Amino acid sequence: MPRATVSTETVRIDLATCPGGFVELRTLSYYEMMQRRDIMARISTEQTGGTSRNRNTKQIMEMMNAAVTQFEFENCIRTHNLEDENGVLLDFRNPLALRSLDPKIGAEIGRKIDELNKDDDAEDLDSSPIAATSFSQDGETKQKETTTDEPS
Image 1: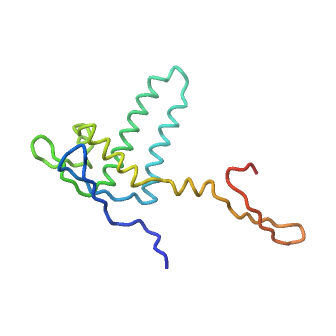
Image 2 (image 1 turned 90 degrees about the horizontal axis):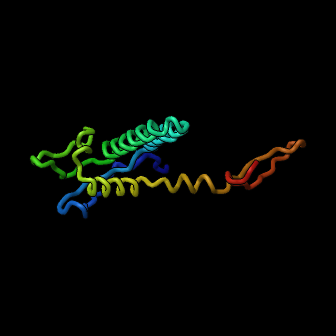
Image 3 (image 1 turned 90 degrees about the vertical axis):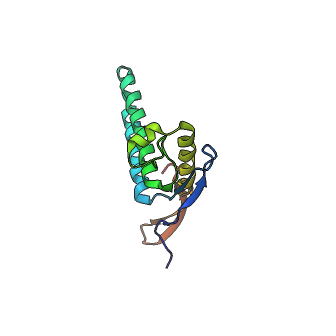
């Protein structure tokens, strides 16, 4: 039988922005990808406000970007050797760790997480041909190839 569960293997990334630093990342499960999309959806929902809410929209968007990043770091980073100025290992389950993380290092880790969790396959599925079945009045089954991009 074909395996349909997410791999538990990690990928070690040696960080260019932090010589000697590394993170071991894992891919998100489908459920976690959906959770991440839920967080992102809150951003677009909150942006629909009128001009009188522009200031509030920006603040909410910034908070959601931080929430997505926190979610990704917490769920994707399995092990690492990154420490604070006192030699204490950073705990990415704690949102305060991101507040003190060097932005170049954080951006590099974020890019690697994005690369590891690319959703290209889902985009390919959205535009791939689908065999649609239609039934004629005489009960005969007919196959019609269509794509999700075509109007119905």
